[in-house]
Image (cartoon, rainbow, N blue to C red; front, side, top):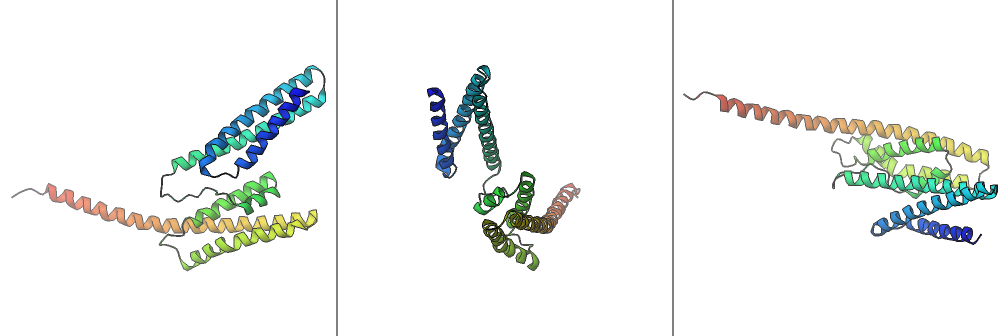
Length: 232
């Protein structure tokens, strides 16, 4: 029993470190990831020990607790995997390249909490499309309609999410579900518009690049032709 209590206290301490570390800035990111690895390993080991002891002694409550520890370890392991993947993506992007990855945003995280897993994937795709178009805000090919859409994405989308979350706080379950469904449908529609606008802007910028390619291809051809002219 003392070992079980010690394991629980240790796990809670690491969980507290995990909660605090999630809000730390870059200088402590490595320490945070190391603590997360240690917490995951400790929870997995604790779950195996408690679960095995419970099964061996037919103490089903201990087996259930061990299973809960293993589930928590799996959850933290998934969190660690996602952090590692985001760090790898950041390293692959060179300096000066606009990032379209999802940056931390409290309102989107709050929205995720009231969504089911499939709905979170829809929201994530919409957010990726919105942020991808926002990354093109410096493009010289933006039309008046594109600029108007940029303003709406920067100002109205956060307002939409905040208003939905505010209405959900005092709503009945069926009302909350209606608010969330309608808002998610709007975000998906907005994301589709943002993706289309991004494709239009990048296509226009690509044409500018192709014009320059053809210009220098012509210059190269002229230079090679001049070198091949026979001397009198």
